[in-house]
Image 1 (tube, one colour):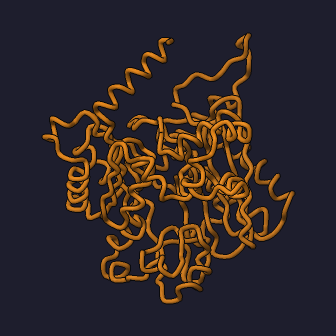
Image 2 (image 1 turned 180 degrees about the horizontal axis):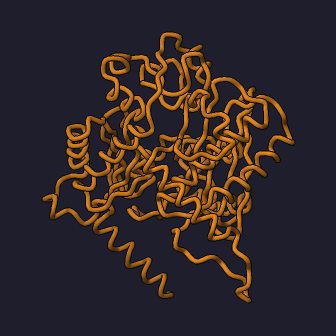
Length: 426
């Protein structure tokens, strides 16, 4: 057996003796909770509450209270459709700043309660309690999770559901079954039995296209897939994808809780109060979004290589285009130049009214990472250092005098227009 095999065998032996203890803390209907906490006399008294969009039906649902969900309303649904299902619901906004503050409070509380905390999103946090048996006096994981839930509620006023198990995948699925405000822990050795209760499309990582392909083969649930011969899956999906699906269906997940895991993407999008068709207006909004993304990128000390533009047309058809640069960038001028080309490519293919426009950047690296060079070291940089310096100077000025203190001229033409119904970063 090779060195890696020895290491894998040794790790498997250790895990059998001391199974990993992973928790996923999931803030229940997070945006709804924040809206209620920020406005206790308004949204705080509404049982049927929708966050996102507008009372006129524009925009999309960011989150909905459990009372509204009983009518079939779901996140990402057009607000007009949601109000059609539940006309009595009240639609409210919630500030990004308030959501970020509450998320940070939850994370800080968790860092006092667990040695390893990883933020998976603004409202989800993984904890690794492996090796804490003596510290916690052999307390069962479910009891620890319940205690953490109560402590978070007491310290932040945010209700959470917690799932637990030996893998991140199991913890995430268990948290979903614990909602609202509960705890569900899957004991070591029970992972496969636990997975039997799920449909394949419910497993994270199995997207609509793969789920549909599996369904055509008669594979809808985990129970359908488990008896299937692995060799048949490999012939159909290829060795790598088949191995991933084989393990996933059995609750096996090799990823670790990593508190330093880098952010995967930064994005900002805007849903308009009325559909926009004029390219001048849309490119002005594109510039606003790009500037916002660039400022967030630089504030976090990051650069990115892949820029994406997203459009949702008046008929709710969503389209996007992306471009990956050879080097990571951060300057507004570079980001906007690429985003503008992507936008124009999308508009050439289909010119109808636009409900939503978004810009994102991914393939992120630390801002001080050196650029990639060709074999002779003579490649010109994707963006001049001057552009980076200018963007940082403008960031400093906006921090001192307000985000509207210095704006590109094309944005000034539109500065008196209404603010967006939803502007979201992720």
